[in-house]
Length: 412
Image (cartoon, rainbow, N blue to C red; front, side, top):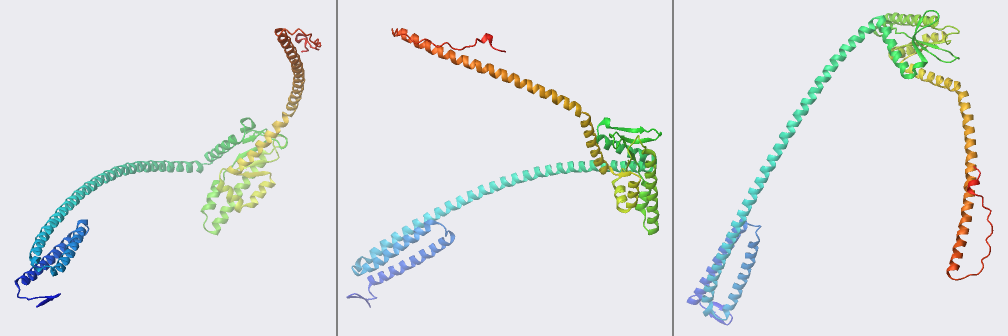
């Protein structure tokens, strides 16, 4: 027996059995619908229509609960209502399932089209990238070939430079060619530092000796001689020395060679009344010059005592620049008289110009005064003409006689 409110129903009642059977079928359908919706939710969790279906199912469940509550009012209509509701539920579920299936098919087709487009874009990008990579590879190969060509050219230059170094060694190994090398270097330095008329190359002195270069300095100090010397053998022996005895012997040779050069220059190129009281010894090697001042200071002092100053290419250029300043000062002193004369003439010209400007200013002042008086007369004539036009015949005061100087008689 089932007690509902004030009424009791027997389990053997056919209507009650139909109602219970309908409820069981309804629960089975709901369970199947839930399972199908769960399966559909697993396949397309992100689809929006599924959420709408669940909401709709919730409403249907609520309606079913309301229908169960309405069983109290009439059990006779329960079976028909449940049958209609069951048919409507099945139809609705089938329609929703069909709509979900159609939506899923549409989404799958859209995803397939998107995948195809993405694949086509990826293939196009890969083709473009491969084309750019092949182009860059070709450019890199071209640049590599150019660099290899530059390396080959540099190798040829190195080979040529090696030959030039060997030629330079051949030149320096011969005393005559070594002397010519020093003279050429001295000539290049002097020609860059001094005007061409301020020095002479291979100048012959009164004693018959020929100097490499003679600088025409004014008195004092007078013309000064520059002679090129290159003690290469002694310097190379000093560089090759490994043992103390070898070093001592090489230093002795170096001192002997330099003393001989200093003595020769002092005796040959310092002539009283013809040249300056000193001369320059030009060493065409900075290395030899540095070695001399580093380890042979006594030789430098001996050169000072003999009035022979040792210079390298760098110090020679500095010395020549000083000489150029001396030559410039001497030439300015020579031209001082002419400059003073020209300044005196310029002063007279300026005074004459001042006088003429003053005369011109006076003429301009007189002209301005005449123009002012002419304007006064013109204004009075205008007023007179206006009175005549207005029949005004009153006598005008006589005009004062202006003190006007005729332009034709102005002072010039």
